[in-house]
Amino acid sequence: MRKSPDVSPRRLSDISPQLRQLKYLVVDEAIKEDLKSSRSVEDINSASIEERILRITGYYGYQPWSASYKSESSAAGASGAESGSNRRRLHCCIRVTTVQVQKALWGVAMVMCVCSSWAGSTQLAKLTFKQFDAPFTLTWFATTWNCLFFPLYYIGHLCKSPERQTPKQRFRECCRFFGDDGLTPKVFFTKVAPFGLLWILTNYLYLQALRKINTTDVSALFCCNKAFVFLLSWIVLRDRFMGVRIVAAILAIAGIVMMTYADGFHSHSVIGITLVVASASMSALYKVLFKMVLGSAKFGEAALFLSIVGSANFVFISFVPIILYFTRVEYIGSPGDIPWAYLCGVAGLLFAFNVLVNFGIAITYPTFISLGIVLSVPVNAMVDLYTCEIHFNTVRLIAVFIICLGFLMLLLPEDWDQCIIQLSTRLRKRDDPAESGGEAGATTGLNWRGRARTSMSTFAH
Image 1 (cartoon, rainbow, N blue to C red):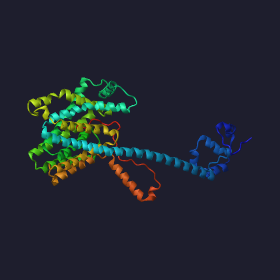
Image 2: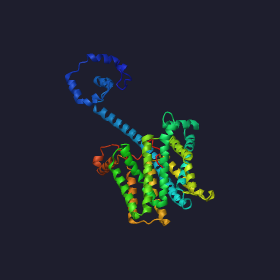
Image 3: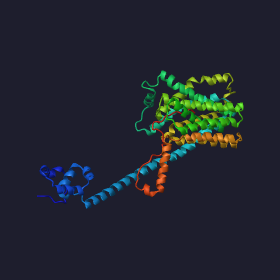
Image 4: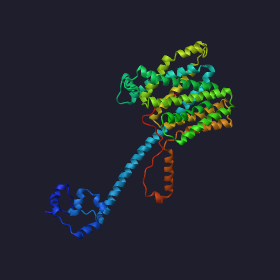
């Protein structure tokens, strides 16, 4: 007995007798022509085996090529797919927007913290030298505070990580960053000690420059280190050539020359500018060599590396401030004459700055951290203007502006030109709804995000 057409078959075995009869089926030529006119080839080719069989036999009234069936099924499928797609798109947009807003808010806070810590340490160091003229001792004291990086990271590990490890286990795991053998004497003297020397040189030259010229010029000139990083990466690491970054490097060099010209090429000013440019060069060399020798580091590995640098500074460099004291190069009358509040303030602000620079990427985009550094230039300028320690002539203002402009140009992602072209295309299509109505595409945004495994501990100040 034939089943009712309303009942649908649940499996192919329900129509097995009909399938066996298919080999005896002879299709008349008129039926073939009718099938060609009623069903498109595309419809048949896109169907499954079962659907093809059901279409040929007309079993249970299954005739998807009929106009009514096709319109109803296509309308229902389109509406269901559209509603499902809209729901997924809305959910995704809400989730992405929430994450981006959260990172942006953290980024604003990060800009303020980085800017205040960097400008504050620069201004406080300038004040310290009025009472305690010992730049190397201050460098040694501030670098020793790096010993706190790994303990601070371990506290965060205990609070956040679901799998808590003992300090010894965590130390051994982070030591794998240096190789399979961990931190051996050979690794220390070949992969850690050179970076410790570069760190100390960067800080010492920066503080020496503060003794010669004002804080605005020092902070603006130090921003050239990003241009030096690009040039060294292009030459040593064979990074991608970008015309906009070459222009930024040229602007940085032009700013250095104009800054020197602003004070009339006096010896005092030239020495100070030379010192801060040398400091920026040491910082760039530190970053490029770190990437070339050690690669990229996770948060724990970066914290361990910086703690080892601070510990090595305390153990191996402590004799230098003693020698400078007895040779009266950096003489201190008595321990009571040392402005401990200023020294601890400078060291604490530099430590906070390095924490934000190296670990701030965990909560926001690296671009916000770089913006905090460049915004310290106008902050230092306002402080210098208030304390009447600087004369802002036209040449100095132009020099500071083009150095900061070059710094900002170096923040552009590699695909910035393609993104601008896509953005302009979308804006033109939005003005012409006839063209934009039939297209649905996703364009890529500017790649402001850093890598998940970022090159940590690469800012040597």
